[in-house]
Picture 1 (cartoon, one colour):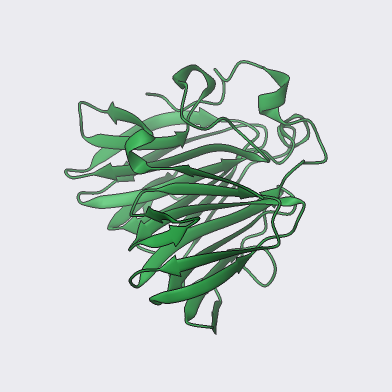
Picture 2 (cartoon, rainbow, N blue to C red; picture 1 turned 45 degrees about the vertical axis):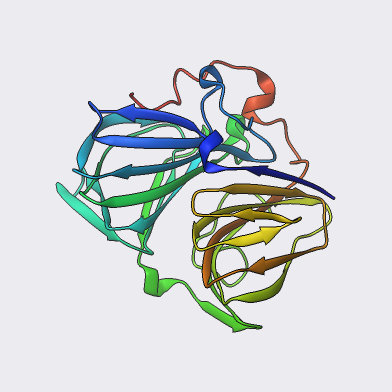
Length: 258
């Protein structure tokens, strides 16, 4: 078992739209030299916040699947077909399966935060499909309760979101103070991002905004020092296809407008 911990202070920090939006990236685009390179089917990982709010101008995506989880406040996306803004609140999720290409406009509202993760479902295959754009309310995610934890099932078995990226699951887990065991298949990667509280892994204390990755383990012991919230993903250690990152192709057609 190998554990990698990336504290929030080591994340790549970017200020966009004249300082209206702050991004802290665990995985950025190839030219940004972020602290973690793409791995598994995980291509991009960013926390975005704004004190004053800002529109994120229309920008394109191709091929990837993008999950936007609203951590705090609200986030909006513009629906061209309905000609209206779709507003998401804390706990809600936006899913973009970009397929052959999609352009959209987003808006982060004042005092809001979102976590955005991109997955590579097999870029060369899924860039040929029609795009899909969906929104999910927090109450649509089933909740599992056991052993001092409350888990919101977002994607995977018994969850409403079905990704094209194979063997990927996502959940938001609320840990009560105490000791807990988290599980991951031996041929997979467990990734986590602390949204609130403090947890100990391998005698290291993680706080809000800290990231961890655990490779090929069956179970990991953590200690939640207070009631804590952690966003967790499980993804294959070796995807069954060559990923976009492995091809060393340019990301010019996939990046957001900065």
